[in-house]
Image (cartoon, rainbow, N blue to C red):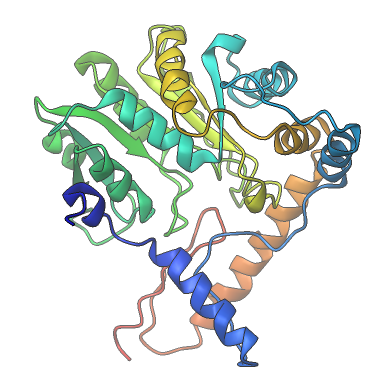
Length: 332
């Protein structure tokens, strides 16, 4: 029996593979310092736990609307207004099983076979594989200077008649780089003028250091949500220590959300109401947990940079955000 060539061509997630290897080593009593998986050490906020527990205790755990519970959508609308200065409607939002499913829904909705999506290196390992899953082509743009912040002209040169979207992940996994506002502004202008979508993976958008507050992509367009090419992806995993709850969302035009909802209805049907209640609890509860996490990992970043500088010939660009860094150990 032959298997699907498309499915067989999809690589295993290396981060999840490393996570499993670390788990097996710990079970054997081996001391493991695991640097592979991208998740914070803080626990889920108590408001998330209480909200999910109340929903579970009610016994009313049934199917929910495919695009998300109205109460959670209301919380996301408020979050979007407060953090993006953008008013959206419930029809502009789809809640999914994590930001990864949101990204898959978007890419599946946008791409025909052989369409291209530009991915900026270094990149989250799942971007190219998700693109390949829909028979589209990832076009990798690697900064020519060897750094982690791309040059606008390098991205512009990669655009072709097949380009459907550009993925921007800033603050960046895995480098910790924060792209300058000027670059985001140029990319928004490029996408709006060329009819290309700008997919903003904003899952780390509040984990930025040294007093810097990057402007959201929405700031650089005068188009409303129905007409802009900007799509926002976010979730509760990284900011609230809720990676296992698997709640993400996308903000896009009503037509995009309508099609993504149809796609999701034929895959996962809907997101668990217990987990949606947890996400609502996180978004509507005290937000000091996010600032505490940001300060903690900024301090960790400072300690890491100090220790790395004690090694001869080890170089590391100072991360501007996230809990990632990419030191260069090639001298060893």
